[in-house]
Length: 619
Ligand code: ARG
Image (cartoon, rainbow, N blue to C red):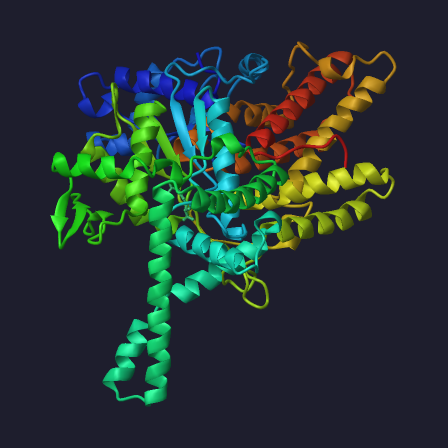
């Protein structure tokens, strides 16, 4: 049985509703609509079921509410019903009994913090990071790493097997362009592969892009409007040059595909430099993205022709103006899987990826943490994959989900960039956060030894960046503000770290008291006495933890866990202000309150860990 009051009450109400209106189909699957009490003075929880039921059955909701109450058995859970139990148009108010709360909380206080293994654990692929070769990581990459890591951790915590996949953009014409450029520069003696930096690569990448893009339209316009012959000549040179560069890049792609050793070696060097920087940044962010999670686009290169042939042979795909497309009902634009020149696309690789993830890796759920602007792409490939049977498992189709995220904006409301309009390098951003956090920590805790302060600054900085990202609604854009994310008040990373450090300090002090129990066992097993309002409210907040995790797993919205932890920290703060712990009257009360502190400590630490946030003992 669950110990989440929301679930227990939902079950009891469902039974009561069915019993109160036995012959009414509307009552069989009526939602009990249990929510936390709107007015905590009156109710811990309430059911709003009587209103829609009244409508369906054509009866006054208050009458419905009394009929439900007559069948509702909440002995040993709630306080007895009174006249005030039905309020307003027909809300049913419930007050849990202190003894029931204590009993439930006691059952949450297990090593797993009440998270039971699921009946049917899933294998879940989380697609995260997805950097591209020869490009610096910038703020745009932050979200996929942070959100993907938090979702992966939460799903693992709930007992599922998670396989992380870093779908690195390391293949195709763009990558061939930069490889060709690097080889040409090397041949001309202007570049050494041994001391090439990611900055050098990014410059080469941009140069190659520019040189390969022919201004065909400009030339056509110039010819049409009888532009000055010199202008036309210049444009003609540009276009011819670009066509030549593009031809070279295409030849390089062919050599790459044919495993030409020299070309592959140059490409590998570019991949190594990019991935070293990428994995270092992930490690600094305390995000679990490692080399073994890489499954770049190149890893599918041998499978693309097979996938396309398979789709064509089984008539899942059809010809359209020389190209090959998969049409899907309800989506206007078909999914393009082979261009008319025979080239494969981003979507082709993603089709091969779904096939591998479901058929080989055994995933029954695949979650893509990718920019929300790629929404159409994912709609198309999900639909095409289902149509092709690539997402089929023995127990039904795998769940394919795009956990899309919005942009990171600057304080001017535009995409976050440097003043000169450059992308902000992720490493620079982290450095700046650590520097700023260092100043904040030095001001707040001047007495801590410098080495500890430096460590705290690092943890606070990363917590601030990650929490600011995770606590915002995933699908929306958010404004990046160092000042706001580093504040110690409000719904921020530093605030939660501070709240946790405070629980730890109380437990430390308790251990130092004469005759006090050793820190890790404080209050363990002590009978819980939840008599004060703030004790009850803290207990209720603690009991909501499993539900909060489940809602993150279902909605793929980490901000729900952030909001939960923030609420818990608030409940703890109110408890601590109003209910003395170390100086409590009587050993039993003191032990009970210490146990509440210890539970809060474990739960905050566990929750922050699921967000990928490290913690400190004091700050
Ligand atoms: N490299 C891609 C980009 O920069 C992201 C990859 C996302 N994952 C995927 N399976 N398509 O947009």
